[in-house]
Length: 257
Image (cartoon, rainbow, N blue to C red; front, side, top):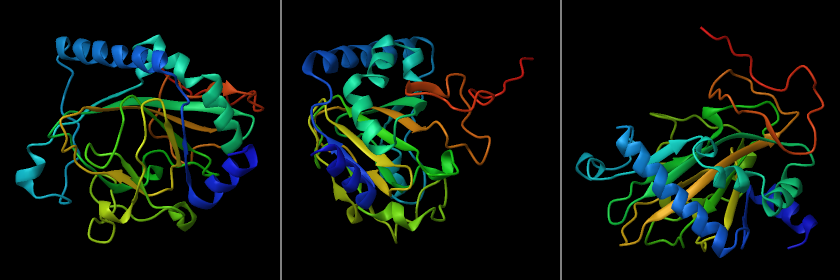
């Protein structure tokens, strides 16, 4: 797609799958970094199960599911700092957001084989609402993802509905928004799925014998301000592209105790 095609598709559908953003060597580097982070987390006794809880699956299924998730992975390994500002990432971000782009946060999600947890359908908006809704996720695939190992699913055009009422731990009513309502987005390692934080998305259980590893970066327009002081991070506001035109508002205000 051309720049204009990317921007128009994203504007209409609320997502864009960009192929081959990272090459095989870069993917291998990030896979190795994920493995080391998981090991360090286990040694630090900080590798809790982050599987979503709720009534979207029967209790006997939920208790069997596992999800390894860690926030701010660019603090844990420089491979992810390089990924966050990678020229091919920035090229797409400029198409979708504009010239002035900030990193909001990063996280890592590992769905292990056979029992990797599902994500019920939801919007990311409730976690970190912003004024102009420029916030988007860039989900970097470190493994091939398909229906069998729980690839992401999106509802095209759902971002145009605006913020929707969520239940439980910020997910949508699964009877009205089952995972099957989404359009599957199978991807290859190195591909990146970009989607607006108002786009309804989720993923099913990993039923395969293959791990599904993703690293997710949240980005926003530098002019887009939060409407609530939530999900605050020391590194929030890192300029990935362009400039911050508001000299007095370049980072969160922290008070050390």
